Image (tube, rainbow, N blue to C red):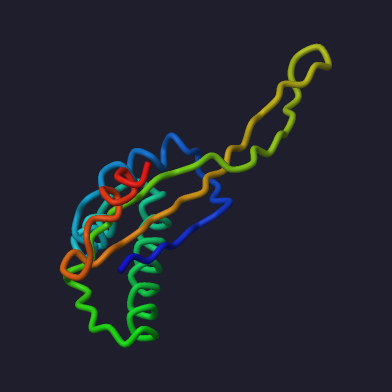
Length: 129
């Protein structure tokens, strides 16, 4: 069983968010929460919330399907960052000119799956294509 969580329009550049998200892929969800708790990057707080939300979604989904779920068996199977809309601002420069400032946003997606009840969703998706 897999569960997904999204965080959209986060005010962090996708490049900075990908540094953290690339580290959590394929790891145990509880280990990821501990790792992100002590990560020095500011975006780690947001990524941690998304992972916790995906775990809560898995628990809720298991309850609705009458499946026993052990949170210790949850693994982050898919985690990626997409670029969100960019806010454009202008800053005054010399001789009456204006310079564009790009304030980038990110969409973070995390998917967790129970390694004991299902096959790996990434492998299954590759077989389908």
